[in-house]
Structure formats: structure tokens, C-alpha cells
Length: 131
Image 1 (tube, helix red, strand yellow):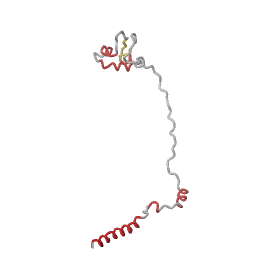
Image 2: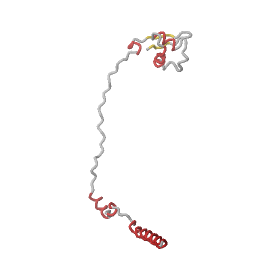
Image 3: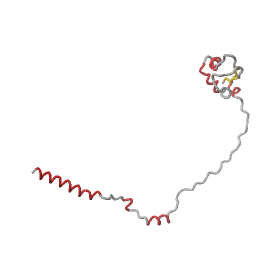
């Protein structure tokens, strides 16, 4: 009895597997099934471009600004100059000109970047702008 039940069960699985495989054939794709290559040549012959055509903008007239002399930074902001003496550092100069605020040495360094390559090496006699 068990053997016949097992045989029937295995037979049912095999039959259902084989019959199910026929349903899993080629899937239909509605886009490709409707495609007709003959229509491509007809569509290409009748289709017109509807895209806008790029046209460069017309050049804008440019006017030269009047040339005026610009005052030096020191004269505009009330800045002053300091002549470096022996044992001066940017730190000490900042304390002297900014009421003890030694952190402003970076401002002096930025204002004199053209003359100072290394903030630790300033020369005696060098004239520094104090912003």
C-alpha cells in the first residue's frame, strides 16, 4: 500500500513537471511582437525633426570702464607700516599693533605675502603693512 502511494505521488510530480514545462516556453513581449521592420522605412521617410535648432546668442556690446587710480590699501583703511627691527616677530608686532591680540599675526602675514615667503623669517629693515 505504501509503495503504490509513493509510486502514485512520484508519477504525479513527474507528470505535473512535464506538463508545466510546456507553459514556460517563450514569453510574449508586447513591444517586440508588434514591431514591424517594414514600417521603419515609411516612418523615417515621413518623420521631420521637431527639435529646436541651436543658434548662438548675439554678442553683447562691451564697454570699457573708466580707468581710475586706486588708493593704496594703507591709505584707505587707515593702515600703517612697521619697520622690522632686531628680534621682531610677526607675533610680537601683532601684540604691539592690535592691543595684545597676538593671534592677528596672520593678518599681517596675509597683507605682506608678496614680501614674506616664510612667516618665521622676516628681515631687519623690512617694511611691513599693518592692516
